[in-house]
Structure formats: C-alpha cells, structure tokens
Image (cartoon, helix red, strand yellow):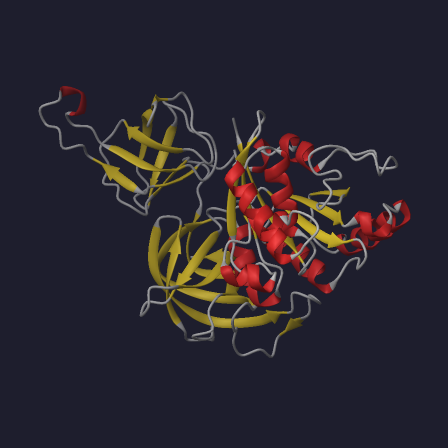
Length: 421
C-alpha cells in the first residue's frame, strides 16, 4: 500500500484544522476518548457543534488563539492508501513552517473561504507550493454552506484562481467545493451541491496518481551508512559490506552497472537488501542496503549513480533560499554549514541577487539581506563538491538545508536552480 503525503494551507479561519478533523472523524481514524475530549471542550466553550479543529490544534497557544502555529503531522489510512498530513499554518510569520511541511508533500490542499474568495494569503500559499514543486494542487473552496452552496460563487473563485495559477508552474490543479464543518464533499459526495460533478476530497486523495511524480530516470543513491556486521563467527555475515541509504531517484536492480562518486570507479550491484529480505528492485523513496560486486572505498556522503547519467559535482550553487531564523540575517559573506542529501560541507554566501515578495512576486534587487520567513535568490560557494541536480528535476538531490555552525540550528532551506563546478 503506497503512502500519500499531503500538506494543507490557507488563510486564518479558512478551516484547515476543521477539514483535517473531519477527514479523521469521517474515516474513523480517531479514538472514542479523543472524540469525547473534543466534544467536552466544545461544550465548555459554548459552541453548538463539535469543534473538530481541536483534533489537530494540539498546542495550548493554538487552542487559545484559535490559530495553527506549528506543523502538525497526522496519520490515517483507508483500505486504498496510507496518508501523512502536514497541517501547516496560514500566518505569514509562519512561512518557514509551511515550507517545512510542504517540502516533502506529494499534494497540497489550499483552502479558500467561499465568502472571502482568493486572498493575498491564498496566492502566497499557491506560489510557495509551486516553488517547492509539489506535483498536485487541490483548491478546496470551503464554507460553501455560508454562501448557500452557490454554484455561481464557486465559479467566480474558480475563474479568479485559474487566472492567477496561469502565472505559476502548476502541473495538476483540482477544484472541490466543500463544507468541512458539515462534511459536504469531504469524505462523501454532497447532496447540497448537485451541480458539482467531481469527486469528494477523500476519493481524490485515494486515487490521485503519484507513482510517476518521482524521478525514475536518474539513478541517485546517496550513501548514508556503511554496514559491516561484527559477527565474525557467522558465515552468513563474514565479509559482508553493505551501503545503506534512501533511493533519491531512478530504479536500481541487481546486476546493474553503477558508478561511485567522487572516485568515478564502476562496479555492479550484487544484491539489494531490506529489513524484510532481498528485493528485485529499489526505487524512491525506499530505504535499502546495496551490496556491490567490487570493494570500493565508499563512505557516508558519497553517491552511487549510472555511468552515463551522473549528477553534477558542483561547488558553485545558485538557489532559492527561505530564511528560517530571526536570530541572524542572511547576507553576503555569511558562513554556514550546508547539508545536502547525506553530505555535509561548509558554505559561504557569495551574493544575494534579489529578495522575492511572495505576495506580489516582485523581485527586490536592492535587498541587502534576508530576514525571518523571507525568500530570495542566493549564490553559494561550497568547500567540497556536492552531487546535485536542479530542484525542478529532483527534489531530494536539488534541496538542501543551511545550519548555523555556532548553534547547530537549521537557519535556511534551499532549492537549487543552477550549479557549476
């Protein structure tokens, strides 16, 4: 059974947490005691209905203010698929949280209040999801019950958002009118909107095709750990040497010819092992252990790929960076640690080309630094070669994080646009 990772985003009070609560509730993914606690809290607050948003807004500050602050991960499953939900905040001051939640998502749900229509926040969330190359986008027009389930109002929002999306790189866009509070078109089709011919949200999530979203052409295997079991007396483990990691691209099979980077030495895959035993092939995002036919000096941070299809070994990077701390600013000459796949190096900011206004898409070329939650295009110089692809081609080998060496805290996330030796 495959896993769909999806992120939700939307303006404040658009109903993200209520929608997720409704999904969990209607798909029978919560326990009775959880529901009782939510019903009790709802009664104590004097609300006339069960406030399902309380299922996801776990932080006390979130419940008190009625907003989502941190990224909340929730898990549920149906007979067709497993799901991981990243409930991301809508406030502009939590842009970094949304970037974190959406960076690994296969699909993003952007909620829009049917009464308010497409807001600046909605455009910002749509831009961020396309910047992060989330392959599938669902525009959930929520609170349709408050506009009398009007087809005309839904069409207005559909038209306005479609015009804006034309400026972005949206591969797959779906519109669903719904009421998370009442459950219309969330898990099952609504009788209140007979004019809507599409599927419910859960049906779409269960059936959206994600297998071809991952890069199955370019073989990329960053080595995370070298396995040498210390069982000298066990003949099965005598002389065992395996290279563990997560497949970042392509399909690997025993017998395939591969190349080790940075050495450039060629060999073949002897076998592919997993926790459950050997497998005939490995593909993203499987975690496996490769055994090779030849002894090569391989260590963490190295890359295994195809002889005629290799990532670029680059020390000069051009990237879009989201700055994630208010302790410092990102400016030219800033020195940081960079973590790319399983390789860590030191980096220096060479240049800040522009700061991007994510609401208007305006490029401020006079900007001298990036502050908390700001995004801009940056040039970096790295102390040792990284084996990279453009982020548009491979999100795993095209993404990186920046770490403050003094605090060891993550201060930035980057998406590679261009790379040079």
